[in-house]
Amino acid sequence: MISAKPTIGIIGGSGLYAMPGFEGEQEVSIATPWGAPSDNYLVGRLEGKEVAFLSRHGRGHRISPSELNFRANIWGMKSLGVERILSLSAVGSLKEEHKPLDFVLPDQFVDRTLGRAATFFGEGLVAHVSFAHPVCADLAKVANAAALSVGVNAKMGGTYLCMEGPAFSTLAESNLYRSWGMDVIGMTNLTEAKLAREAELCYVTIAMVTDYDCWHPDHDAVTVTDIIANLTQNAENACKLVAAAVRDMPAGRACKCGSALSHALITDRKAIPAGTLKKLELLVGKYLDERTQTTEAGM
Image (tube, rainbow, N blue to C red; front, side, top):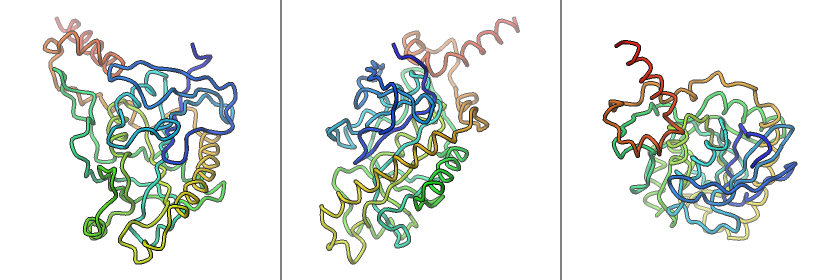
């Protein structure tokens, strides 16, 4: 049993496998209907607030982007009581203006992944959530203000191109994405964002630039040592940003993320298989209860 319910979740990407400054830290193992998350959740207090941390790729970086159990990772956050997720991600830059060690807070995504499981729904229950604006604008503002307060060079807005991986882009692909106006490229965050929206969680990506993608004329001069050094520096800056964001996080949510499913459930309540209802109770229970009460009241 955990001592308190964390309402803020942190997902650490490449180079960020723990969160310094935790107090009263507990490891929590969570079983989900989708299997095991990437690692145990670390739950504790950061800047006086209850927080849950998950290493996206597992401690020791054991899990490839294409192997990640995104559904289990987001479900685990939801089951802990998390309402907001700060997601950190190492990315390549597709624009000269986004330099290594810069942070970008993208507000859009483009999907180039190949058949990943990116929804909790199906098996007799259909839901179509709004995803025109995939990032919580309120949470992005908190992250940006936190970056400014700790001296991290962060840029609001832009598009994150989510590729499959694990290999990096070809030169032709990199130039194609640049012609589309993409800002950064990574392998994970779009899938997380879709699932966070279905789980009615506020979500923001904090994209940490490690290097320019292969389009850049100086790309061949970048060594693995350089990239690791940037990952290390980015991780230090990310910890400062996250601590400040947690410290200044508003008490309540004024956005619409917490009601994303209110008009998304399409299937007639009576047609939903009992097993699916049980499986998705954490997400849809409140809406199906309301629907049942409304139907009974109208009889």
